[in-house]
Image (tube, rainbow, N blue to C red; front, side, top):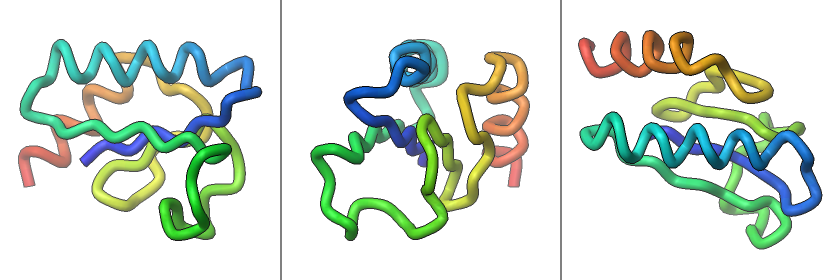
Length: 82
């Protein structure tokens, strides 16, 4: 699962949301969850999430900030191959 942590007041999070939607559209085998830290309780995100946007894949941080599309795809493909 790809989780994208965002915050309502975050300027860079708008692009992160666009990337999350692109993953949903172009990689339908990948489950995507967006977590808005303004709306979440502490139970919705691990302590390691200290900045937004942050992308995690299967519980591991893969990017602080929005990754390049090619970089994210490579990480997702590697995770799916396991």
